[in-house]
Image (cartoon, rainbow, N blue to C red):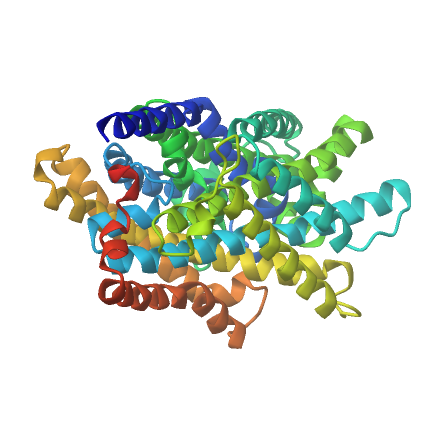
Length: 493
C-alpha cells in the first residue's frame, strides 16, 4: 500500500514537472498575442478615432494601463498562492465563495468563447478580402474561417510551448511592422508632431466612455497569465512578472502607436480618414510612404495577428474546461489531456463550439444587405464586445476575491497595499469602466441608439453566472465531496 502510494506520488510529480515548460517570455508572448498588436492598431484604434471623434486615444491606453497595473498588484500576489488552470474561477472560489466561483467560471467560459469565436468574423473578412484583391479569388468568408479553426485546434491539442513558439514568431513580426509604421509616421508628420493627444483635455470629454470601452478590449488576455500557472516554471515568480511585463508593454506600445497615427495622418484629417478607410488607413499609409510590398506584408501580418489572438484565446478556453472537468463541476471527460499534457478534451470542445457558431452565422448571413462586412458587423462586433464586458466584470469581482483571500489567510498577507488597498482601488476603477461599457454598448454595436441587442448581449455573458451559482448550491447538497473541491483541486493534487 505504501509502496503504491509513493509510486503514484512520484509519477504525479514527474508529470507535473514535465508540464512546467513555460517561462516569463513564453507566457508574456501568449498574453500579448491575445491583444493582437497589429489588429489593435489597424482595427481597434482606427475604429476608436472614427466612433469617438476624440484625439485622446493614446492617453486612454496609459490610463487603462495604470488601472490594470493596480489590479495586477493583488492579482499577482494571489497567484503566488493559488495555482490553478481555472484562474478567475479558483480565485473567486477561494477568495469569496465556491458558488460565486462556479458562477464566475461560467461567465469566464462564455466571455472567452465569445471573444475567441467573434474574432473569427474579422479573420474571415480579412482573408477573403485579401484573396479577392490579390488573387482575384471570390471565397466566402466562412471558408478560411473553417480552415483556421482546424489549424488552431491542432495547435490546441499539442504541446503548449509549440503554440508559444508559433506565437513568438508572429508577435515579433507584428511588432516590427508596427514599429516601422510608428517611425515613418513621426518622420512624415504632415502637420508636425504635437503632444496634444497625450493631454487630459483631449480625452476627458463627452465620448470618453466609448474610448475606454474600445481600449479595454486591447488589453484583454493580460489576465490569462495565471491560466498557465500549472505549466509555468517557478509559477510564483513567472506569473507576476509576465503579468506586469505584458501590461506595461501593451500600454506603452499602443499609446505610442495611436499617437503615431494622429501625427502620421494629421489631426485635421484623422477622424474623417479613419471613418472612411478603417483598417486600410494603416495599409494605405504604408503603401504611400514605404511601397506596396510593405503594405502587402502588413496586410498578411494583419491576418496572422488575428490568428495569434485566436490561438491564445483558444488556449484559455481549453484550460477553463480542463479545470472545471478535473473538479467535476463539469463532466469529468473534459479533464482529459493529450500525451503532451495539453487539455485535449477542452480544446476539442472549443473547436466544436466555434464550428457550430460560425455555421449558424454563415447560414444566417446568406444574402445579407451588409454584404462583405457581414461577419465583421455581426459575428465580430457582437461577440467580442460582449466578451470584453464579461472579462471586465470578472476582474472587478476578482479584486474583491483578493481581499477576501488574504483576510482568510492573514498569515500569507503580503502587506496592506497588495492585500487590501490596491485590490480595492482596482475593483472601484474596473466597476467604473464596466459602467462606461454598459452606457456605451449601443455605440460598441455600431448603433445610434439602444436596441434589444444592447440588453440581450450583456445578458448572454452575465446570466450564466447566476446559473453557475445555482448549480454549485445543488452540488453542495447532492455531491458534497465535489463541492469541497471547487477551486481547490490543484492545491490538493
